[in-house]
Amino acid sequence: MRRLGRTVLVAVSIAGVLVAGAAAPATAATRTDQTSAQERKRVDSVPTPKLGWFNCYDGAQCATTWLPLDYDNPKGAKTEIAVLRIKAKDQKHKIGSLFLNPGGPGGSGVEIAAAAPLFLSPSLLDRFDIVGFDPRGIASSTNVKCFKTVKDQTAVLSKMNVAFPWGKAEEKSYVEGAKQFGKACSTTGKPLSGSMSTAEVVRDMDVLRRAVGDKKLSYLGFSYGTAIGQYYANMFPDRFRAIVVDGVLDPEHWVGTKKTATQEQDERLRSADGAYRALQEILKRCDKAGEKYCAFAAGNPVANFDLIAQKLRQKPLVVTDEFGTFTITYADFVGAILGDLYDVGAGDWVTQDSQFVYTLLTQPSTSAKAATARKALMKRIRAARAKAPARDFPYDNGFEAFAGVDCTDALHPADAGSWPALMAKADKRAPYFGRAWGWATAQCARNTWTVRDEDAYTGPWTRKTAAPVLIVGTKWDPATNYDDAVSAAKRLPNSRLLSNTNWGHTSYGTSDCATGAIDAYLLKVTLPAKGTLCQGAYQPFLEPLPDDPGATASTLKATAAQTARPQVAGPPMPSTLNGTR
Image (cartoon, rainbow, N blue to C red):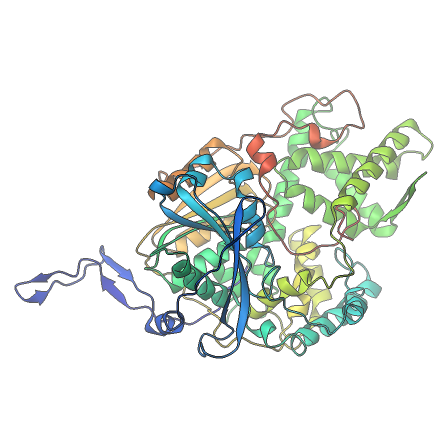
């Protein structure tokens, strides 16, 4: 979701031949951009690291290396970067290394690389060493820490521990916490908090490219990882072999411009708009499919969903069984639905969860329908919470990792106190989800988050790259709006847009068409035909519902690739229903 910068790239001819003692003039057709002298000096002055690989993760190899905290001072302070690789099965015919990133910001490149055998195609595993590294400040690399103790951190995050604030009291508390959080990261979190821009991550990746022995980079990035890929393409336009970005953030929308500097970030990215569009399409398809195929089809699904929202805004739902009690707020419900929309089976999950909550809000608590819904919902909540990470000891820097990148990369409004009004506006633009996406960056207010990276990259985003970039957009993506894939492809001259009708966040593994096109490009640098539109293998409401009304959406018919692919990282969003609170 971000990018900042300032690199002047020089256009040169790839056909620089001498004719009769003179250089042939470059033509528009052959002219490509080069890495700027400034960026060459920064990264090339760093000696190629010698990675001391050791066996790890049951079949992988791990290493750590120290890279400059500031590339303008390569001999100065360093930060430790964790790297993992899984060696190509066919070393004799190996193409090189394929770098992966799952997004976030804050997602672990080490973890997605370790999981690669579960979701990447055998052809990629045969021909590439799969490489992932944890960006600076994140996961197994040196961690950014904005608080001296877990106690100090907890005192601040407790004011922000909601999916998003609803009502003046919660908004006041959240703004107060956001200000304290931003100030902590701008003081205690330094110097790392001011050195986590995407540009620094991309510089690290260029040095690591050399370290693994690759002359040119091959890269596959998901979600925010698409920002990393597009930064690299614009900062190092002559240093990559193949870049695929799947689930795309338009980098200009991520960073902002002088004209959009006062906008909250999602007013540019329109993630909330994408989520609302996907929800409305699901509810309309549910209505058309009928009760035999969709759990939420009785009556008018669009009106019934709005009724749930209205009731929960007025009063939370308290659900109790013999094992305990849970309170589900309006924000919890919206956060859970947003989480459902991330899944390839979004239609089933959204309508199932909506029906559970609708039944409990509209049926007598002693009715058989309410009892069935209560039992199923409690099972769902407990299963989600069982997978949730611990929030206390040891120190968890997940939110700091997200903010360390976003707040440093992008332009944000000046005053955190302006967020309640901005969020009311966002909800009018994109009902339900405007607040869910917009509040995540309140701590980034420019008067609050005051630490800066003077070497952050802010564009341009229009470099003529030597190799093509494959941009993959998902029609119903609730996190990276499909419109951003379209605009990013128009912005980058030597790129190709691949569109897909799957549900959920990102496309790889959701259809033979999309996966095959990405694989073919990575293996042979062969682009799909212009205008290619893939059809997601799974579409909702095509098969009858199971006879058991309490059956979960896990009964949906997903492919092995769909169920194996790892969860693509997004911003932290606490919610009772999705198990993160």
